[in-house]
Image (tube, rainbow, N blue to C red; front, side, top):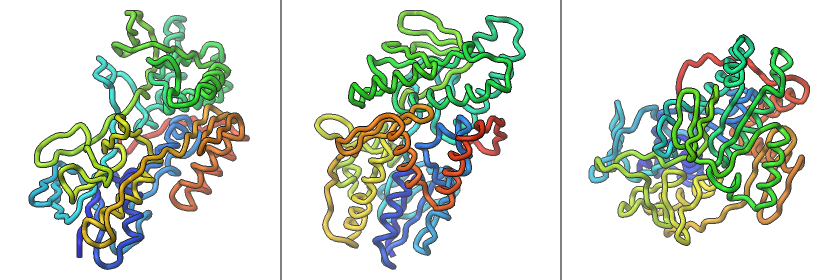
Length: 409
């Protein structure tokens, strides 16, 4: 029986495993290795960070996702791969393979900015979401007790660095979250300052101009200030410095300014990403495939975006080619890049959406955003629970209890 080993349990890893298990019979087995024993539905992570939905409702244990005798899961940290021996080495295991699929995902990219990694909170993992939520709750409590006006103002100033989809969605949800907590605090709404910093000329540069403008107007309505053409050059414990040398004081800094590929060494050689061909093969290894955020595929001189929707679409072609490489399916298929559209929510009741050259904005786009993501959550029980959380939010304030963490994953 052929052994197909997948490294990673994110969108790319989980969906390629699903496709493989649909296609194989008893001629192959699928082994997944990951440090994380659950699948995290990252598109809703910002809602967990702002008390909109329960953290348990966007994760699904890997062994619940795959109830298949041809599937095995190993929770471990992969250190490197020996491509000649065809062995994956992890902290406590050596796993032989006939075909290897790299789905190692991405990591936060701090762009080498001094102090950014040490003094900002990113949004990539459950641990990050917990930190964001706890930071906001704790900071409001400190500000309420502060007698020094300058200290109070600093504590009530929140900076978000990065004006892409994650930053815009977090800014909108953060504004709603804080506003909902104010009735139980002696803090006025006008004391809160939320600032979204973006180094480019426009927020959401990948969107049509009309929708970029609408998103920015909605943020302004939510009392979020937008600073464009502003490059952060240094980050301190309670300040940032911009390209003009101006220092901005703050009590909280969130980082949403981009990701880079996460990779593991092949034959003790480190890679910034895995360069692949249109068959997802990691050149020059025909029996090693890569997809999702860790893979670099160039189309018309540009790298295709690092998006979950693309990882899901890539999974079907990658699974077919994995089996074709093992002579378990017909000839290799070439992947053809196509981006179906975009879905972005900005606070309650407003969103923008573009699906196959049809564009929406306002309440309908927000409703569509929720409906589509709800349909893509793994497991019926998770869908019901998230829908219930969202329904409760119509009638009650968001959950503002601090989270006690048991793990940083």
